[in-house]
Image 1 (cartoon, one colour):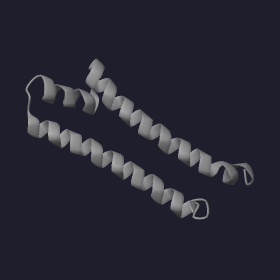
Image 2 (cartoon, rainbow, N blue to C red):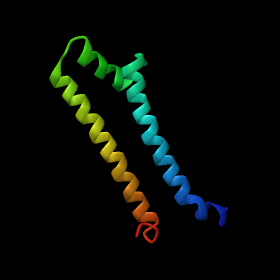
Image 3 (cartoon, rainbow, N blue to C red):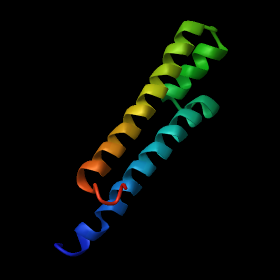
Image 4 (spheres, helix red, strand yellow):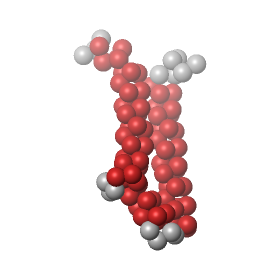
Length: 87
């Protein structure tokens, strides 16, 4: 526990954030393409059926903001826990 976890924590943290980003983008794509629900489905409905550009813009900005916040948290956690590996 004291040897394996600290040495692999950077990989676990990176893998966790990478999978979170991939899962978020796939969820948006699946919702838009297959009607699987979620934010992608709302984006598809707003753009395809009732063509509300203000809602499409807001959903797109919210997706962008969420992705930026996720990336910011990832970078901040990596810098906080492993400052030597980020240089």
